[in-house]
Every structure is written in structure tokens, then in C-alpha cells.
Amino acid sequence: MSDTTTSAEPTAPAKRVLLAAPRGYCAGVDRAVVTVEKALDLYGPPVYVRKQIVHNKHVVTTLEKRGAIFVDETDEVPEGATVIFSAHGVAPSVHQEAQTRRLKTIDATCPLVTKVHREAKRFASDEFDILLIGHEGHEEVVGTSGEAPENITLVQGPEHVDEVEVRDPDKVVWLSQTTLSVDETMETVRRLRERFPNLQDPPSDDICYATQNRQLAVKQMAPKTDLMIVVGSRNSSNSVRLVEVAIEHGARAGHLVDYADEIDESWLDGVATVGVTSGASVPEVLVRDVLDYLARRGYQDVEAVTAAEESLLFALPTDLRRDLKARDGAEATQVRHDAGSLR
Ligand code: SF4
Image (cartoon, rainbow, N blue to C red; front, side, top):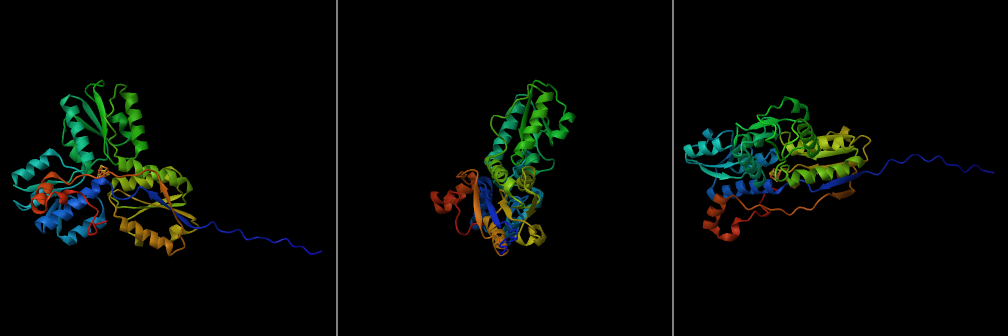
């Protein structure tokens, strides 16, 4: 009688990629990047841009090569030249400075940031104390705060709630930066409401649809993911949040990379499932490079995880549309994902 028992080697789990959808460019970033591209085409280089048009290294260096000059403040722009304001928005004082220097301005502030500015102005004119949840020094927060500096107090997170002081606890509203963690912001609001039970909510979500959707996809993927790779730059708030959200929701590890060549081979040790996503300012070409990198290492099986469909598109800034229309006619004024675009 022969013994036919075989001792099977444990097989390694199959390597695969979960690819988030939506990921990458949001409507506000698309509009801002196309604004610079079309301005370069229309007015010719150089075109000045105050601050990084969007927080992405690749976008900024590519536009620099095409003739965009990024400056920190409008006083670095020669008098009479054209300056574009970035997607993150600017304080009213920046508009005034530009006017004083007779600059031609094109405002690429995302309309969803402009919405928060309008809310800040309205609540300030109604004499509310505005608790702005956001990160100190972020350009969007600086711009929004500039709308009503006397009325706005920055709240950087739940751990800072106890420090907040208001004039009238019954006349307080919270607003937020558009690119925060939804969960952490809700925790900040919960604690604020413990202190100020009559705290008012914003008229609609300030954390924008793109931030929310990208976080939602990551939350769905994270529990099945050994490693989450988020493509995005370190100064991109929404990209950094995606890594945090991944870890909070079960990914064993998470890393932010600008380019595929920043991936450390050792991150893949023992990894079966890699999650891949990208921040709202990231061109898709950079995600494709990461997928190629992973495919060369055996991660060829790519499965989409779709949390939401997006179709929002914003019209280009009014001044640019007017100039384009004068040159090309009405059809040139749409944001289009044309082949020459930085995507
Ligand atoms: S992340 Fe949201 S607020 Fe920011 S540019 Fe994109 S759509 Fe606008």
C-alpha cells in the first residue's frame, strides 16, 4: 500500500491592482490648467501665475517649460503684464494689489472655492463668527480668511477646538477648506457643536465633490489593500489626505509619490494587492506610469473600484473667454480635454 499524501506548498496570493475611480483631475484643476495653456497660446509667453496653478510638481514644471512664470506675489510681476490667479483662490487684497500695478488678471480660482468665499462674506456681513476648519498657511485658507479677517477664526482640527473663542456663542457658523478629510472635519464639527450647540452649518458642503469622491473610493479599496500608492505632490492637501484615509480604513501601508520612479521596491515585499489612486491635481499620465511600473513587477491584473461617476466641467474664466471669443469665436471658450492638454 503506497502513501499518496502530498504536502502542497502554500501558494502566494495572486498579485493585483485595485484602481480607484474617480481619481486625478477634478473640474477645478482641469479648468485652471487649461486656463494657463490657453493663455500661453493666446497672449504668448511669458504668462505669470501667482503661486502654483495647482499643487502638482509635474504640472508646474511642464507649464514652466511652455513659458509660464510662477511667482509668489504680484509685486514680482512686471507692471502691465498678465497674471493668472491659481485654483486655490486669493484674498481681495491680492486683487487690489494687482489693480494698483495695472496687471491684467485672469482668475482661475475654482468656482467651488469662490462659493466658500461668498459664504464667508455673507456670514461676516451678518456679523457671525466664522470658524474656518482648515490648515494654517494653505493658500486656499489664506484666500478665504482674507474675505473677512475680523470674523474668521481658523480651527486646524479636533484637537484645537478647546482653544476657540467667539464673541457670541449663538452666532457662530463653520466653514471649511475644500480638500479636507471628510471624517476628521465631521469630528471637528462634532466637538465644536459640543461647545457651541447653536453652531450653524454651511448652506452646502464646503469639502468639494472631488475630494469626497476620491476619499470614498479609497475607503472602499483600503480594507482589501496591502499597499496604497497615491500619486500626488506633498503640498497637495487632498492627495496627502488620501494616504491618511487609506491607512485609517485598513490599508497596511500607504505612500505618496510624484512619479513612479519614487516607488521603493521594498514596499512591494509580500504585497498581493496594491491600491492605486491620485489626487485631484494629478495628470493621468503619471498614474499610467505607476501602473506600468507595477505591471513590470507582476501586477498586471487591474480591477477598477468605482465609487462615483463625475461629469462636472467648468467654463473658463470670464476674461479669458472674452479674449478667446474675440480671436476664435464662441466654440473656443469651453474647457476641453484636447490632445495638447496636460493630461
Ligand atoms: S479639489 Fe475641489 S475645490 Fe479644489 S479645484 Fe478641485 S473641484 Fe475645485
